[in-house]
Amino acid sequence: MNGAAPAHRPAAAGILHFPRAVMTPRREATMLAFDFGTRRIGVAVGNTIVRVAHPLATIDDAGNAGRFAAIAALIDEWQPDELVVGVPVHADGAAHAMTLRARRFARQLAGRFGLTVVEVDERHTTVIADSQLAQAGQGGRSGREQRDEVAAQLILQAYFDERCGD
Image 1 (tube, rainbow, N blue to C red):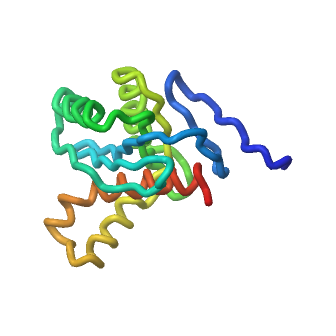
Image 2: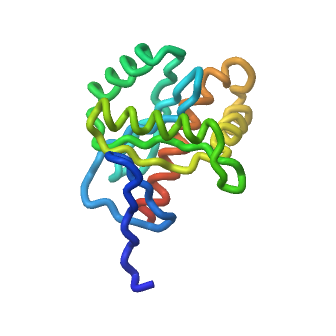
Image 3: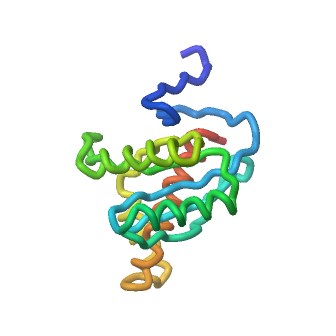
């Protein structure tokens, strides 16, 4: 390889898939990340200069209208430059039903808010989030309430680590 970062490949309008390579951001950007679920959506925030993700909120609403209203409020408050959506796949990388739903959610975000949406592999983030919460003494019911936003934090941190590198 000649040292240049490979170009991203567009999948659909507004959706970017980055190869597993280190890329350097051109400017400071605020990012919101989402751990999509059919019941809850975890949200995390961070920026490309500090490159540290923080859990932000859990949207606990099964209806699309309530979900997108909550997301609109977060976008209005944080003014992100880009959005990141975790896309679950099987351990071998194969897609499954939730893969398709998360990708649809990513397309909806891009269409509704006019922001670039980056998809990130989110394999095992919920399991890791559960483990981290249990180690912090916040397992059980209280941990479940925070699990999705911690999973979103892990998704965004993986994006920073992979895209921004050291």
